Amino acid sequence: MTTALTEHAHPLVALGDPRTAALSHLLDLALRLATEHDLDRILHIVTNSVCDAVDCERASLFVIDEARSELYTRVVTELEINEIRQGLEQGITGWVARHQQVVHVPQPYADERWDSSVDRRTGFVTRNILCAPVISNIDERLVGVLQLLNKADAGFGHFDEQLIRAFAAHAATALERRRLQEEARHAHELEHAMEMGRRIQRGFLPDTLPSIAGYEVATWWQPAEFVSGDYYDWLPLADGRVGFVIGDVSGHGLGASLIMASLRAMLHVLTKTLADPDRIVDLLAESIAPDLKESQFISFLYVALDPASHQVHFANAGHAPALHLDTATASFRRLDATRLPLGFPKVLSGQTRPQLMLGPGDLLVLGTDGCIEVRDASGTMFGNERLQQLVLAHRNESANKIVAAVRDAVQQFHGRPLPPDDSTLLIVKRRE
Image 1 (tube, rainbow, N blue to C red):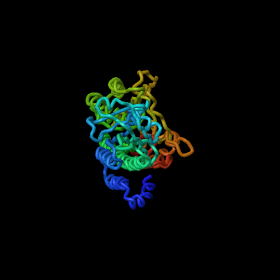
Image 2: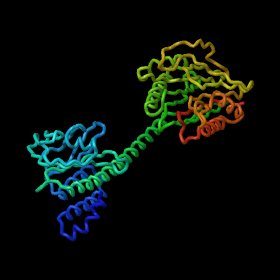
Image 3: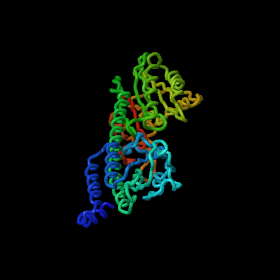
Image 4: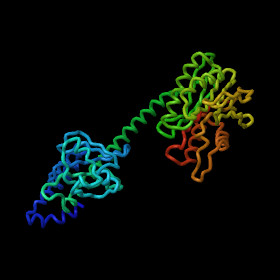
């Protein structure tokens, strides 16, 4: 559109046509908008420039508010009110927004599309209107509507229609550039906030792992997003045992991470005075229930290890994978559920042996479903069997090397920069 106007510039200059001044205003507008990022300044520059170029009484640049399906203007030349808002079904501007066409209305009062409410509110008299859609040059999306009122002398002509299209195009470029800059800024701020959230959540997890005579402990924690609904921890218990916990809040992301943080706070309070796994899990279920909304639940496993007797007691609220590797027989035993996940009514599972003994070289393998439910490109699931085979193959190595082997295998299997679900693995190994 601008090019077409430029092609006519030379003969107009030669003839001394006053329209050359309008083209000069258009060029000046382009230069001024090139470095402008403030919305109010953009609106002010456009409306004042187009008013001078077209020699009309007033101009308004309406911006679309997609969330409210409205058009609004925050700058109206010489108008007595600060903001005008109207729906997309209202007035000439609404018609232009819906049809995305330039419209010239020489007699507004005779046009059924016209909304006279602003004239009634301000005492202004609208004699003629020229209106154009402001369309994104990126995706042809409506950005706003540019409206001119009361052209002097004979009213708006064909050249004015060309001119308003050119001004609208420049306004669209400036508004879209500003929008992209705002989106980039918000994205940066969000990424910074999420990174801070990740650091805060990482601070909820143990800074160090316990040093237990005759035992090794290793972990892997990988959120699917910046923050995670997976949780692992260890706690020294009042009776000399060491508590290990692992949990998985349904879903992932910020909501799940907040539930996890609440769960952790409750657990740390309870273990100050309690050591019995069943009692702790029951109280956790009662305490966390009000925080679980819209079918949320938490699978949760609490293990109490006595390093002196090597006896393990546990309470399992529907959590898996949770395995004991008996190296003497090279066989796995599941730590079966003793109750439903937190968030469900307590229903006893019939589990009669919520305890086990760790022999030399034995392993506790405690993970979240992100370790076993990931899929490769063909849709095949990693699965519990593959996890067991990996642990069995590396059982004679250190706990750290076993965790690393599982982590590398899972990451290679799904082949993504981040896993599709939060992934956590905790391994406790009794030395030979």
